[in-house]
Image 1: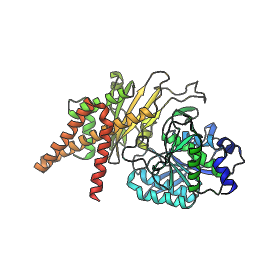
Image 2: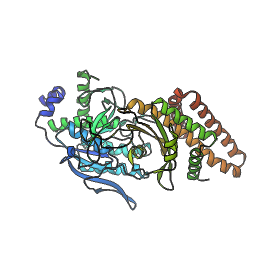
Image 3: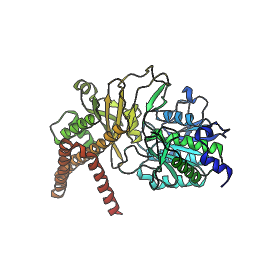
Length: 256
Length: 222
């Protein structure tokens, strides 16, 4: 075991966050991000809106106020708060259209994988209809060394949620833990992590703050931790990050 | 009768406070869901494919709210209700504040909102919302789960009713086979209605059972 791996396993999160960290590119596939919010000022590097144009679904460059619902803005603020080294990439895959959602999500994920961003945050659960395509994309990301962090369904009727179920991803459910540094690793379950996402203070679209709850908001805290790890140890591969999270979860008694 | 016409028929039946089994059962189920999370009001919105928007069809807990909301449209891109439909996930809403300590409120409206999508066969049929106006009230993951489970049963109930309406129209043309199927579907709807009225605590288990049956049938097909 190398010195850096020992440190990656054991250095307290708070100290890790204070190290000189390399920038880490984090993509947020969500409802878009309000980049005008003060807490996100200067943190969003690029913004895209994935839309259907004719018969194609494409990622088009978008503006600073790219959020339709406020969901993505809240998610982005959590990642930004946990990982000061995270450079955020906004990929809007949730629009006001109720059709073609799966195709839009797939195209957005493909865009993020092709761009090579290191951490991909998906605070959403996709339809099982396009399971095959989604699995292939997540595997491609895994083999390229990209870490995909995805949310479990809030009410897991009909499945835990995709892509969180895939072994190529880090699945995140809810647990009674204080975010972001305390979480549990659930050995043997497809959704490996349980993290805190209850009553989290997050940025609201249009400025201001709100309280958010759900797996959607436990997931970005884990993405932020992945960004911290990659900032300190840029060579880590997704399987190593998962192993480190497991080790750290087991070592720390996570207070509620 | 097309599927969308069936949805419109259902929407009208519930919205008019019809005496039919579906209308009564859906209102009872909504009332149970609202009580289960100790909300003040709850609404049922159905997806209208022709206009591409959600539409309020029923509200329980406050007659004035129902009169004001009924028939109103909600675009998919609007608020917590639209978000629940777009993400197909239960969503929880809280007010927006100017400051991170949340002392100076910016947004108007209720103190707490929960919105659960109604999904059947990967299709969003509508959204069920619950709201509280009590100062400082917040919904958490417990309320989200309970409301989401009620929404799963509501989706099954409405999907069956919608199919039943479509089949009833076909039944006149297709003879005894279709009529037999209609009878079976009606039995299912009636049983769900009874459960909603008498055994609210069992709804989560029913939702899981329906999912398991669906998965079993799908596996059998392959």
